[in-house]
Image 1: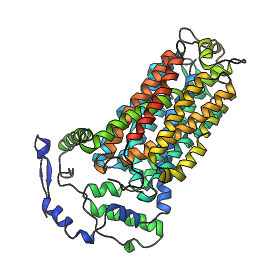
Image 2 (image 1 turned 45 degrees about the vertical axis):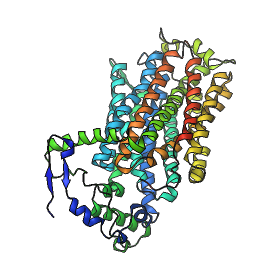
Image 3 (image 1 turned 90 degrees about the vertical axis):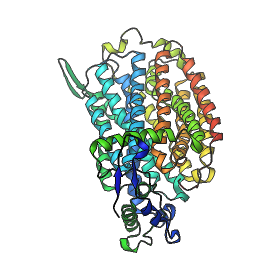
Image 4 (image 1 turned 120 degrees about the vertical axis):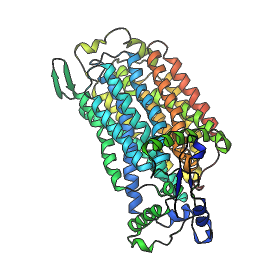
Length: 527
């Protein structure tokens, strides 16, 4: 059948004139299977383990790129002459980039495909993360960290959509929790890397140019993203996405490949060849269009998809996810990225003192810190404490892996956000370094359960055609929360430390209670 393409100025007049083909594909549906049955028939084995390893490492790579900034706050303080406000901007700028990149790449993932867009985002992340290590001043470093954040922002929503679309519904929640657990691995990798590299006397120092240990650490932090970009060449496009685009033959090839890898049987023995049509006749097909029209249609598609998540049945979950994402990331990153800095300040005194009291003693807003005279790096205890807090979420991750599909997403989200809010308030009250370390570990562990649940909900609440866009938009609200949390902490840590800590506690508890209003997605098929 010949396919005619009509491209006019009005978006609604740009459509594929292939309705009769769609009608033929919808006939005899009793001979066709839906996506859930098709993916279930592939079994579970080597392919999914490889997928988990690569997508999990992508999640870990994002953690490395984001969390590495927290170790740069005390380490680059002298070379870049950082005030507390500068540190707030340095912590926040990656989230500014993520807010821009998340919307851009997430929408492109819906329009152009998951795998290719994910590879591009990871490459942008690695490229500008590595280049930032060459920066010699705060402004240049800030700019390249922003561009690195653009890449990170794209990889997060796309990798979750991509991974979820290969999973059978009966164990999807557990497997998404496994994917989320790699964030903890990234935390541990970056903490261990910082401990191994930053205290060492490494690199080059000459007139007008330095490439010392914290810059080497920054370069090494970009390598995980590059390895993910290369490893993605081993994986296919999402079959769910291909079916949604009307590319049934390509989807069949993917199902057969997964089946063969998992069962070690011949691809031709895969039991299904026809699938229930998920293709909408108004979907856009880009081949045979000019480059100008492809760009135009992509922009219009992104705009239309964005508008679609703010109406109809998806409006309520969209609004709730916007608020909850804002609250959890304002609270988590508003504290988490400052832990190494606060550990550094606590280690500088050897008597009982609260966090807010020690920050007033360590004010670096108006003058160069005294330890910069001798360029002293943070001591080993700071990195040991950071590594302990990075490893603390392991039991919580294991629990969510085992129980996510039994207790449900909403259970973990509500319990986690309320519990981490109480821990944040506890951080304000403690006056001992040991107790502070314990509560920091509890805060990280309990927060992990909420992020795992929220990642599952983000991938399951929205239909395939809107999933990447919806995750990108809700994550933009999350990035805004992280930005404001870090900026507020940076501006107030030396003058009104109690304000950001108490605000973190209130937002986490309030956001957790809002989770009760979300619909249940546990063991439900993907839309």
